[in-house]
Structures are given as C-alpha cells and as structure tokens.
Image: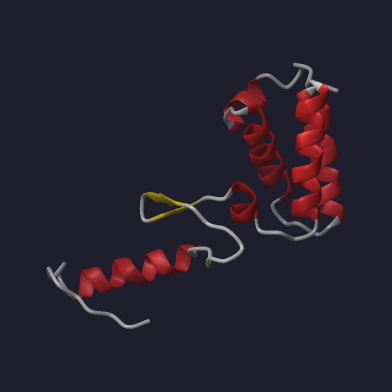
Length: 118
C-alpha cells in the first residue's frame, strides 16, 4: 500500500469515528510511524509502505478512532514554545491557557515574580 492509500484509509476510519481533524491526525500519525514530517507524507504520497510501518500506522489509527487524544498517542504536546511529555496521567496543555498566560503577562507588565494559584 502506498502512502496516499494509507492516508485515505486512515481519514475514512477517523471520519467514521467522528474525529473532526481526521486528515490532520492521519498525516501526523503516519509521519510519526515513518519518522518524518507531514510535508514528507504529502510530497511522497506514491511511495510504498513496508508491512511493519503499515501495521504500526493502523494501530495508531485504531487508538485515535477510539477517541484517545493525539497528544497521548504521540506522548508530546507543545505549549508556550516548549515541547512537553504527556501521558494518560498528565493533563494536556490547552491553547486557551496560552492566551490566559499572554493576557496575564500583558496586564502585569512582565513583572519578575508573579504568584498564581490555579
């Protein structure tokens, strides 16, 4: 199976599981399996996948189809220009929290010491 066929299959599985970001998630998961980028997936869509890569990809798609957050599948999440390790025992940083931090920093004029209790 080539990359494009695998992507199409992954998208269909995720769409049937009501994943709104099916295409993005499929490309991210395949890039993880191949140790590459989404750009590579798009530019090399006719390359064939080996059986191990295809099996690994299908496992990740199945996990995502079960509604497992992609950050938990990848074990990473970017937050405030940093990459954090996440797993089922950690909370996934949300983009809205970045907005809150930016607003707090703006309102406090970047004071050196700010104590905030969540």
